[in-house]
Length: 122
Length: 180
Image 1: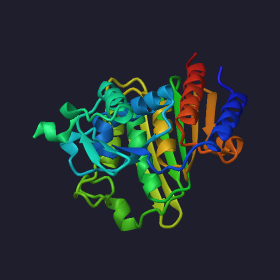
Image 2: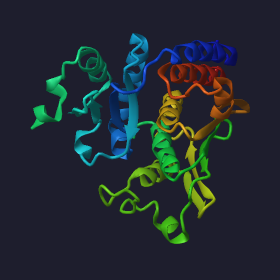
Image 3: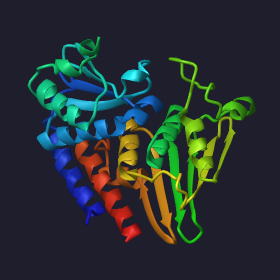
Image 4: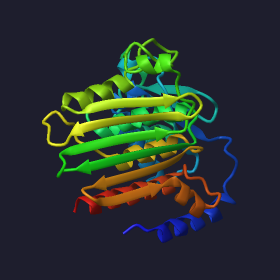
């Protein structure tokens, strides 16, 4: 059973880690479109899968944020990955399984998963 | 949208975009009364009467990427399909309240779906907003509040995978007990 006492333990463990964590420079930013179009197309499980994989692997150099409508609703769920050098990759028609592959191949190993990108669809 | 929890995620995103610092999601579910009522209350910027009167029109939106906004119209439609009702009240500078009532056993009522995931997505998406989630199921009640959580976190960010994962588990377990 999860309790607030358990939350406090997690909190204390994290507070200790934060001190040794480096600045956010060099982090990989992952942006998930979470407007009506994205949500209806399945963006919530995509975001959840990415968060879960990041937590499972203990990645500290990547974080996930949300944005509104990117303007290409027919390609939702859309995930944009901004590498540390600012390079942007746009992944389209994502699902939870594809999201896990993007974390493993792109975020961890630095290899863009070309078959899921918007470029592959054109 | 295939789940009511996805509608909630979408509608509460309106609240955070309206600058709300506190959003309350109340779900009052009763098999005895054959009703499921969702109330979303925020202290965001609110709307004037003119905008309010048109807000469930799909061709009304505040977004700038296009001229359609489907969120509230879809939510209203989902409630009315079951024979339920929908209402929205708002005051400029004070906030907005959206209420949708569903007939619980209607074949057209979408399942509530994964509320834990909806709450975690909301909390993760808007660190500066506090969320209160209350769920009543035939008299049994579960409540979750980020105000309480942030007090315990004492400066540690709520938007971290470990904390969000704990919140997900906490809400899932709490709701599980409600339905036992």
